[in-house]
Image (tube, rainbow over all chains, first blue to last red; front, side, top):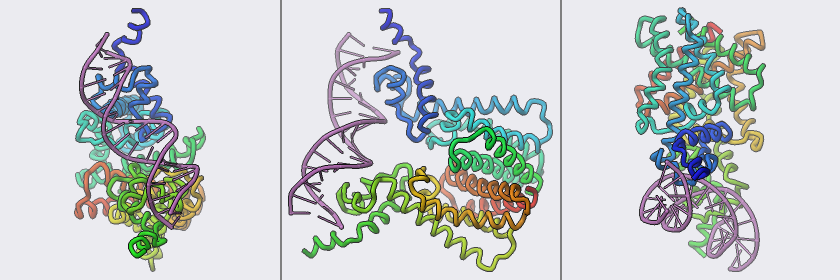
Length: 195
Length: 195
DNA sequence: GTCTATATGACGATAGAC
DNA sequence: GTCTATCGTCATATAGAC
């Protein structure tokens, strides 16, 4: 009863998400497998299917959490910031921090190629992140087409920066991260000025 | 002899690259498998190992060709262009065209996570592409640190644009591609101006 | 240069017992 | 809610025949 019940604690869903997060951190979202997550959580390969309909569903759950965590970071970092240009700069600099410090979340949210149509809640969570840049761009440029282009460019810039920073170079040092953060901030302001 | 010799034509390496290219176009670089490439080339799963030491070696061969093809496109598009800012704009706009029209090459070159250290020739070919933006940035800004930051930002911008264009939206129409191309060009010029 | 045969090892997913 | 057992599938890679 005792040990057995300890296993059957009803918290497997949480344990699986935890294990999956560590797994994704180590091996990247592409190499994630549901079986290994189960193995690390100490349960059989079929146990997860009571909580997640399929492999991708666990990944999607993590990705959604990642977006929400990212959004929370943004809210904290942007508290009291009024200037739209500053909002865009800080948002883009913070993305590098997120990608490095919350690397498992970053992997799940940005590098697992999940079918967005199958996991609508994922897009909802992501949209809240995108709204920050969209709103700032709209505050800066009245023409909606221009504002949309600026927001898109800003998103593309930070996404590309993170990808090249994390995968072209190997292993981010603290110093190179600071440099990259300054570079992306500067580039964002240039974009805001000149787009 | 006849049919047999047709199979044993000595051109398997080429046939495999061809099959792999089609495979990557359809399913993406992540889902590429050497076995399936062999299947499509009409040979046994072990036949490729006479020409490629391992799975990734075939992928790397295609990625290298992709970089060279991309470089050729750039040379053509930039013939006679003198202005460094224009070089950067055209380079970035062309990247979207490359990603869409040569999608298999794009996948192999930019979305197969190959170990760069294991395939040094891959980096050599890629560096030729990067040199174009590096040189233009250096012509624009004398401070080497600033020039490097500008080049990095420009590369990140086009990379991010292509990634979001191809995967956020589904299936590029001709019109949306034109729009995206204008947007990335405009963003690049803004970057050049303000960085 | 390509073949067959094979070793080895994942993985996703389902059925049915407890 | 978790288990065992299992099916089916696919992959990388090697050894040795032709």
